[in-house]
Image 1 (cartoon, rainbow, N blue to C red):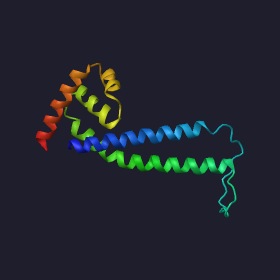
Image 2 (image 1 turned 60 degrees about the vertical axis):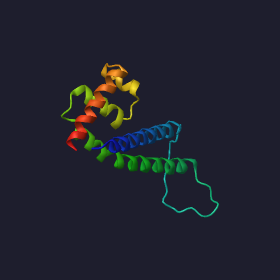
Image 3 (image 1 turned 30 degrees about the vertical axis):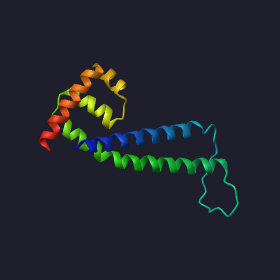
Image 4 (image 1 turned 60 degrees about the horizontal axis):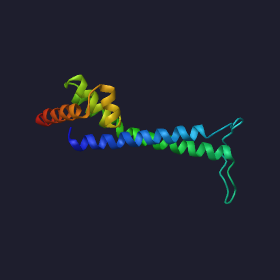
Length: 134
């Protein structure tokens, strides 16, 4: 594992969070769509989509986008979790919380019960230990 792997994993985790948020917002905007039917008939030029079909197409698009983001994120997550399993629990939580789950340092420090200086020290020491092995 390298620092670049951590950065890639954080970016992928942020993308997953954003995709999930967009999906939830889209589902919340559905309102009442009772009696929704999704036909397989192709649309001709200029023929408008029914609101229900437009909703379903957008939903499928967002689900596909979320799937892509998760496929990028999952192998990076596994690598980081595997690499950090021999570290102290608090350090694992700090690294996983920030780089794998894409939390802000304030959120992660709050969950772990440490201040920013302590978390910086612990993460820096963990990086030194991890990079020695590589």
